[in-house]
Image 1: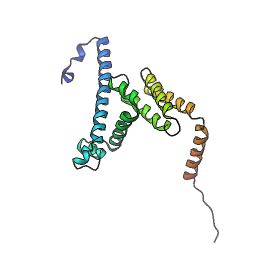
Image 2: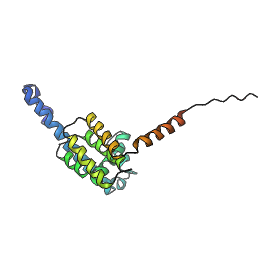
Image 3: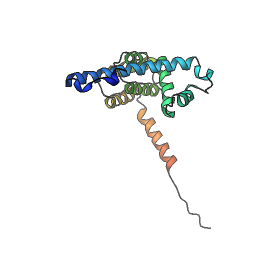
Length: 178
C-alpha cells in the first residue's frame, strides 16, 4: 500500500533508479512465489476439489487470467519446481526475471528432446549465469547458440521441418481437360 502513495517525484535521479531496480527484484521474487503457489495448488488438485476441471480453468474463470497465460503459468510452475532448481532459486531471490526464466524453460524443453539430463542441468546453470547479466534478447541468442552446440543434427532436422512446412502450404493446380 505504501508503494502507491510513494512520493517518487521527491527522489534524486540515482534514488529513483535504485528504487526501480529494487522493484524489479521484488517483482521477480513475487513471480517466484506465485509460481510456487501455482505448483502447490496444482499438485494437491485444489482447483478440481473446488469444482474446476483443472487449475488452468480455475485461473481463467476465477482470477481472469488469459487462456494462454494460464496454461503457460501451470506448465512453467511445474517445470520450475520439477526440472529447473537453479533457475527457481535465482528467481526466488530476484537475481533473474520472469522473462529470463521463460527463455530458460523453453530451452530446457527443447534440449530435453535430445540432450542428456546432465547436459540439461549444465545448460540451465549456464543460462541462469547469463540471465544475471544479459537482457532477454541476448539471453535468447545465447540459448539458441547453446542448442546448436548441443545438437549437431539440428541443421538437418531444421531443413527437414522446413521442407515439411513448405509441402503443407504448397498449392498445386492441375488442369484436366474434359
